[in-house]
Image 1 (cartoon, rainbow, N blue to C red):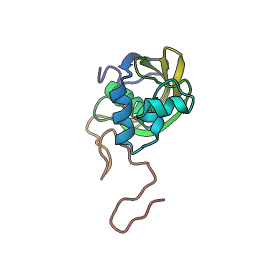
Image 2 (cartoon, helix red, strand yellow):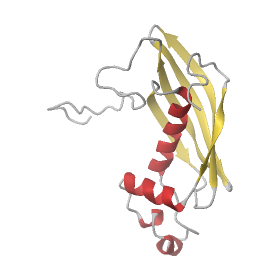
Image 3 (cartoon, rainbow, N blue to C red):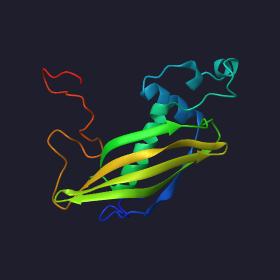
Image 4 (cartoon, rainbow, N blue to C red):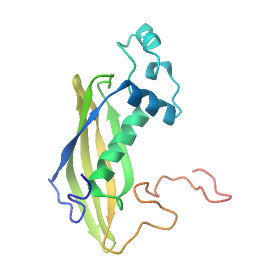
Length: 167
């Protein structure tokens, strides 16, 4: 799926949908990977005791899947600059989340293009996630800035240099 629009993103272009099976393993692994040990993300009985029909996906896993959707589409040089999402209907095991996207804005400069993509992730009970992602697509021969890895972005506001402190 990578790189269908990466060369020249245009306003109004639709990204192809991405279907993600929501499995128990995905939910639990995502919670563990993001160090979210809330029982509603791994213990079905405790989730039911708290009023949920089953375990459900956490926001950090959803955030990662949205980022993956964008970087899979725009390719390995894409740099996520901002991910702003809101959760809606929970993602429960056995469902499928379908991510879709539409390019809303493109700003071009000498270094490449920065696109704003509206993303929606729907499942069997409604919209799981809505939001926007800002992604920079370096031009030919332009690589991400010093200390920056493709797809990770450097605008997190955190200084990880020796002696640096989080801002």
